[in-house]
Amino acid sequence: MGEEGSQLLQRPHVLVKQHDDCTLMNGFAFEFKLDTNGQVLRMNKEGFNAGVTSMLAYYPSIDTTVVLLANIEYTVWTMLREIESLLFV
Image (cartoon, rainbow, N blue to C red; front, side, top):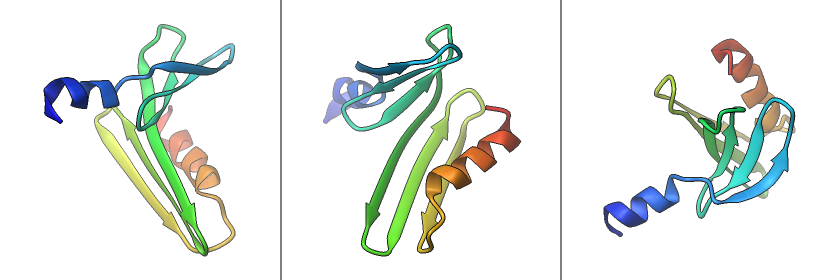
């Protein structure tokens, strides 16, 4: 893929929703949450299949990656919000 292709995958490209405190955008491979200055707070990718859900989230400002796997009826988004409250994101 090369460096240029890799960089394209790691950038937001399409506006999804504008909030007062953040902007949600999609990229070619990931979803992005940006602060009011346009800095990436989180890049993430979720997935699901029968009986399993998953979430990969990367926080560049603190160089932290969170990986969640669940096989119960407790969404990975709920878990991610709880973790983010601890990370102060």
